[in-house]
Image 1 (cartoon, rainbow, N blue to C red):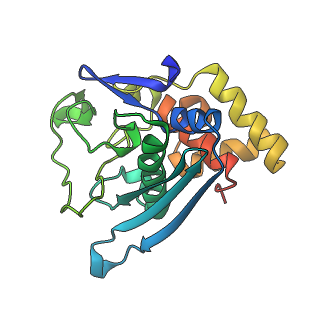
Image 2 (image 1 turned 180 degrees about the vertical axis):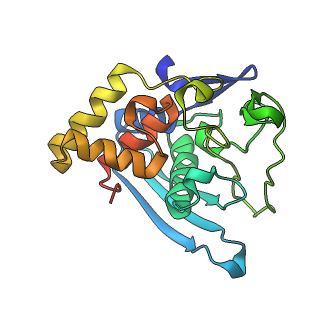
Image 3 (image 1 turned 90 degrees about the horizontal axis):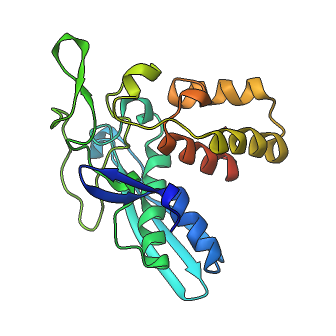
Length: 218
């Protein structure tokens, strides 16, 4: 796994979904299929559950992932099914490529995630956000932008900015694959994350690239 896809949080290493996907392609990825196990609704606490199956030359591997307003950032609460799918694919990909460390996308919100405290400042520490009830065999987690301000200064406290390589990839994929102009990419990124590509964290940029590749930015 390339070092650029390994993130350190509180002395622990986590892998990015983009790294798992690249590794899977290198190991003969044949197919990734997903299905929605549970659609979010008021009756089930707005919990989305997705199932993913990854097929490589070594066989088939599956994983489950969930997302709810209690375990995703405010910005991602309108994309619960998408987040659940990403988490499910991350789990299946980890098994497929034999990566033992958790993916950053699978993480529950913990003290490595900066959060707003009294006075509008940010610090590391446990969040007061609820994590929701457990679902058997499903990883609960929030993406690493939970409760972080959309301004680059505040977000810089806990997330490294998107690399130049990632930004070039975003615009190149959008232009060649989706025939999107630069202003359309910026607008779509603003719509999904609340800010332009230049202000994305590395994790968000990796996720945005994945969404563009799969044509899921509509």
